Image 1 (cartoon, one colour):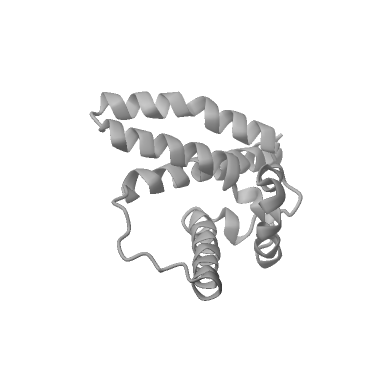
Image 2 (tube, helix red, strand yellow; image 1 turned 90 degrees about the horizontal axis):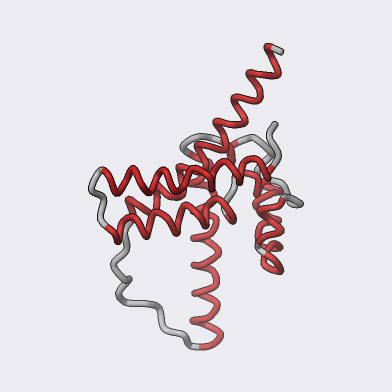
Amino acid sequence: MPSGRVHLTVELALLPGWVAAGAWLGVGERELTAFTLSYTCASLLLSPDLDLARSAPARRWGALRILWTPYALLFRHRGLSHSLLLGPLTRLLYLGALAALSLVALHYLAGVPFPRDFPHWLPGPLLVGVYLPHLLHVGLDGLASLRARFL
């Protein structure tokens, strides 16, 4: 399998091409910015390899990497976390659950009010930015497996 460094290099090397293609297709500046930020964050921080407790993506979280230990215990490496559709969804739901738990704790312990209105956000470009590096990661793993089988 390609190393984490190879995965990250390929994902980040392709980003300017994705952005250029989006601009050529007439995608708006706000959408391209949202895509670029989510793609970069997903490549660096939301890799499928978070299912390994001692992975480079987990280390990039610094002291917060402890938050990913339960995730690594829940998902075996290259299992559901590497699923084309469900892999990113597991990480997004996991982060959402952590955020919700934090908000509830802040509300009850410190009186922080629950937000009434959520800011307008761009779910399409954000989701594409999360899913595209994941698809590249899984695709590279698949190519490496095919290559190993036939060589």
